[in-house]
Image 1 (cartoon, rainbow, N blue to C red):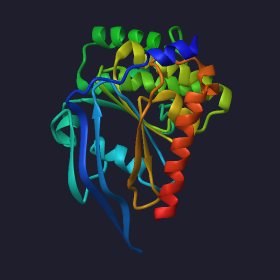
Image 2 (spheres, helix red, strand yellow):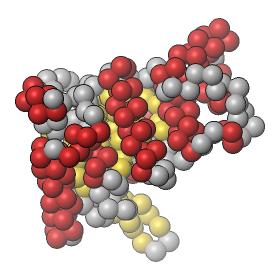
Image 3 (cartoon, rainbow, N blue to C red):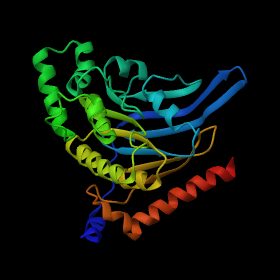
Length: 272
């Protein structure tokens, strides 16, 4: 069955990029001197793609994601989100952002945490209620609206964080290693749920991870980055089908992609 799916896999059609970076550099000025975080980064992400960024700690993966979100500002080069600057995209609420930690307020219920950005944006109470119910259903947390974060497991808290990012229905989801602190069993389950959610919503997802299996399992495209200053050493278009059971990770096709990711990481270290 898996082999048949793999044979039927087709390359995603080329579309106008949702996120585009060209010759991006970013240098932080510190008391100890300049820190070169990104160097000559160029990349395009098409509508509906699931793109993972992988590389060693400190290579600029999160910094690049934060540039997309207007949380960091490049020293030189260009970056656009939905054809406009990251600042304009932020003001237009073009993306939702999921951080490494769930970041839920302990004094607010799960529903209250998800409602928070909707309250800030001025949605009516009726719209808030409808949107909260819809995203809780999407992340399989229906019935937990009145629970508090401390009453949920770590995996459930992260799903609530994803629901909050989805609540205002942005087309782009930026995710900074959201499952890194979870155990392997929970992580596998959330990977499956995230793929299902992506298939249903057709969002464009940019996803930071340190895990090679996670990057290969989730992505339509894998971006391999070098040690600091972060450069792109390889961009791998996945040959895997959109529907991916967990046991696809045992197939030769999956292992071949994982091997190429490892080679890209190794080449980045050798070139450093």
